[in-house]
Length: 128
Image (cartoon, rainbow, N blue to C red; front, top):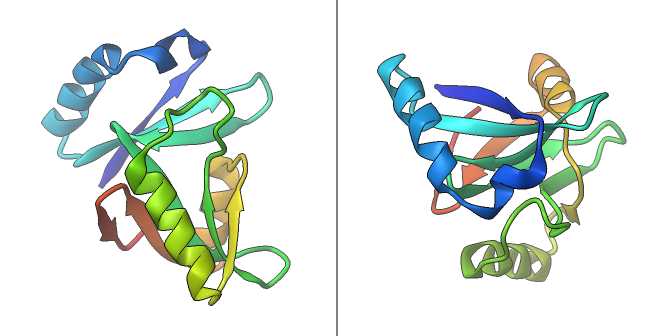
């Protein structure tokens, strides 16, 4: 189970310390992780899960099998796990690989349509 919190300021992105309390609160409610959303005033963009990168393998609205993660636009930090995952996925060539903004409404719609194949949080995978 994943709880989610909406960020309204990018100031929190520079330090993981402010994420500790929400993680503790989520755990006390039985959730295993916190899905961080950034509210840009119109939509809620998925950024990370806890202190980990978020990846989703799904069938997008165009019918393509696609692996998506957030772009390195200053909202998330670069890292070896993220880079390695993207590099390997591109080498496999089994699906489209995208670094782009991803919104919670896209995922809830895809989940309702049965298009979500797998979610990945940095070092482990879990069904959605």
